[in-house]
Image 1 (tube, rainbow, N blue to C red):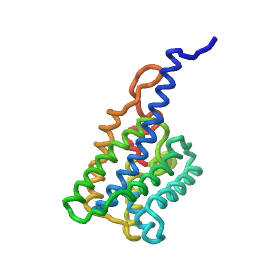
Image 2: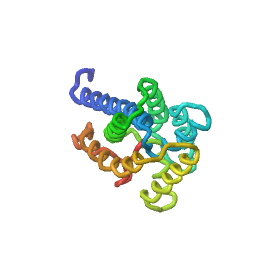
Image 3: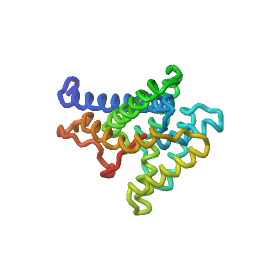
Image 4: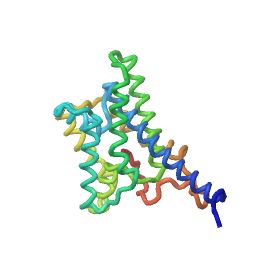
Length: 226
């Protein structure tokens, strides 16, 4: 008997389409939000401090560096016995491409009256993008998987692992020429609450029971970002 047009099949198909849409829209917006922070020039999120520093030293674009670093971090998942998902692999490429594409379109911002709104818009958009992409439930980004993998292998808290990793990348990135400033601090204190807010907004109901669990299999209390 044909199942074409069956309500359950239509529901499952629509559920998958929504999740995939959230994943790729979220990753693209994440890259765009990072570009806004770069253009603002008032301080970047931790990993992009490293990416920018490496870009300054190598002559590559920050998006290309983000892709290379993401791929390298993903290789570290092997000894940590982490399993990537579609979202993990997509994260490596989509965020970097979206960042470079947005930077190519943005005009240069010279005055604080332009740069401060760019910074604020970038942080809010980053939180929105984080909620979209995580709620799709296709796996964490490579950098967050590194932190959760270290947590599982060492028995130390996710907060400690995340702090240690992000302090290390900020210090290294700053030494290489990456931008650290008020925006870095503002991002650090605001991204958690923003991400939690947008996780609730974009929660995808389960196809089977209509529940709104958004992070199956991911550690509680961890805000996972690309």
